[in-house]
Amino acid sequence: MALLTKENMVIQQQESKELNSSLTDTPQSLRNGDDDLEVTLHGTKRGIKSRHAQMLVIGGTIGTGLFVGTGQALAVAGPAFLFSAYLVICFLVYGIVTAIVEIGTYLPVSGMSVAYYGNRIVSPSLGFALGWLYWYTWGISVAYEITAAAVVISYWPTTVPVAVWITIMLAVIITLNFFPVGVYAEVEFWCASIKVFTIIGLLILSVVLFFGGGPNHTRLGFWYWQDPGATNEYLVGGAGGRFCAFLFALIYSCFSFNFSPELIIITAGEMKSPRKNLPKAAMHFIWRLILFYALGALAIGVICRSDEPALTSGGKGAAASPWVIAIKNAGIHALDSIINAVIITSAWSSGNSVLYMSSRSLYSLAIVGNAPKIFSYCNKHGVPVYAVIASSLLSLLAYLNVGIVSGVVFNWFVSIINTAAFISWVCCCLIYFRFKKACVAQGISGSDLPYTSVLQPWAAWIAIVAFGIFGLLNGFQVFFPGRFSVSGFLTAYIGIPVFLLFYLGHRISVRKDPWIRTPDSVDLKTGLAEILADEEADATIETPVPSTKHNQNRWLRKVGTAWGWY
Image (cartoon, rainbow, N blue to C red; front, side, top):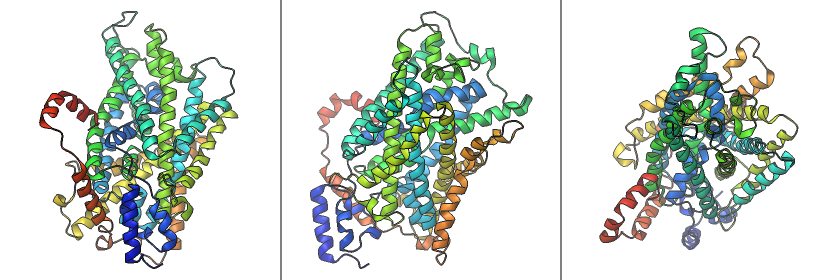
């Protein structure tokens, strides 16, 4: 199709400013013909503020995996292996974050996603496969969070059928995703804040119990690291069993971090001043990883025995949470129900985030022509309504809980989502390497990039090897005698052939094109002028804080800056 005329482009820019949309950042491939004008004019809006982005990223990854799922890893691996595994994964995930944010701050276009960068920097086939991988995985993740919440609700005696709870939770999550992104982000900000403050409170409680400040005045210290022990054996005895236990902890703990780097990139597509705020999100991400995940894993190993029966069986819902077990054992009344309610809120919040990501992934696919054009349509509030509807359909898998044991469905979803995350993180590294090659070939130095990390490229090389191995070993336990099951094998590995099917299927359809874009042919220019213009406009709009007022609120601003509110 022919490109827009000069007159139409002028009209487009004028209306874009009136609507306060992110239209000028729309990829050039969408600016085609009069038929595409409505889609372009009604694109997504940059309604996500810096504080929203900060909490969306961390809140989207603090879900039931951290509150409840850690219990299974503790039971299998022991406290020392659990803590060590979380430290390792924190470093690896931060390596992915710094790599992909380096690309995102250079080209923060509307509709951006890792799949979009895969298409633009590596090859259309990789972008196609990644886009559909994200769409179905994040759609399934909604069902997972609903499954976890439904299980947790059973902690309280109730005669209400599980299908009713699933319906209520789905209705709330889907409805919120139809609101303008600013409303959605504000609601998610406060929901995620509840989770964050709860984790901080639980960490403080762990310190209190460590020193014997609980009602029973039992000083825990590191007693549970001695009895029943700091490490466990898994599948086999001896050193081999301890290695299997640590490997299980490494792989299983990844679930708590799944897709947090991708969420940073997707929210940046609707973020105000992305070149300024996206690096902030990356910088704050590392200390939050350490605080919430690494220290959280350490606290769990201190306050809860790894041989506690309720971690793997005999408990209902949140009773499987090591936090709740420790609270009950310490004799603290009523707090277990409060934590139970927070876990349900956590599942709701995480479900919100992953449905948002799923719909934006489908929207991004439609922008570059890898999905039907209808999914790129946005209403006047910037919501891709048809993409939200299509993504919501996958969440109906939550109704599997009605006919199958919830714990079985829970583990199915964990395996499927883990496999997809490992594939995604390997591809993130590949995209980063091709981006750096393209920068070198086109004379773009490190000083020309808005954000770089001292960890790169070494962190990306370590991450690509580690996550590649984890992907192949995701279901390693099914290969031990007596452990094989068809469902266990399929849920652990079916994601790999599905991804290859998407990739090769698209590759066959464009077989005359090169397998990979050469560094010289990678488009690092389209949209850059508009991004720089918006950056200058944002800088002009910002009003400096008076020095007297700044001095008065100095300490408050320091706290806010550390938290990510400024």
